[in-house]
Amino acid sequence: MNRWTPKTTLIVAGVAVVGLWYLKGRAGEALHAVNPMNQDNVINQGAQSVWDVFTDGEGTIGTDIYDWQQEVNEKYYRYTPLALVDRVKTWWSDE
Image 1 (cartoon, rainbow, N blue to C red):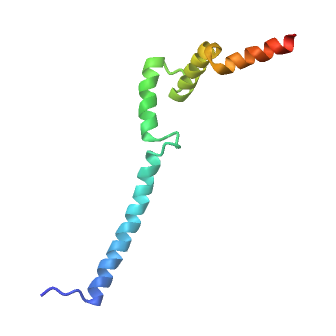
Image 2: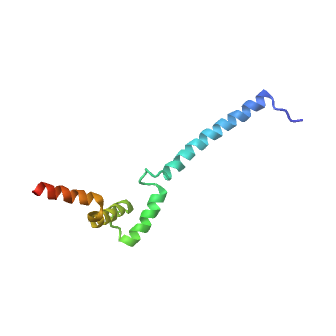
Image 3: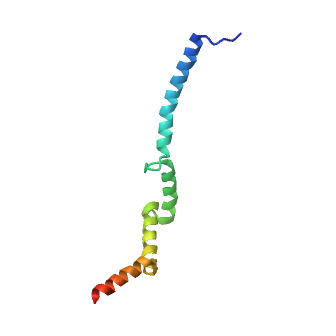
């Protein structure tokens, strides 16, 4: 007959606490390895390695995306309502 005595309960609880404490430390390391804010995370390193193959190691994914967006914004800015407002302001101040 299996009975949970107070002694058995304390032993199981102690083992569980020690196990969870150990896993908490290991989980922290694992979460830090995939943290998107960490520049040395595993996913970033893998993606950057692939990106370096295509770009000969010049720039990072983030900087290249930013540069590409700026080129697109500059190219199509003249067709936006903000560009029209800027042109009206320039025209109005010239006279």
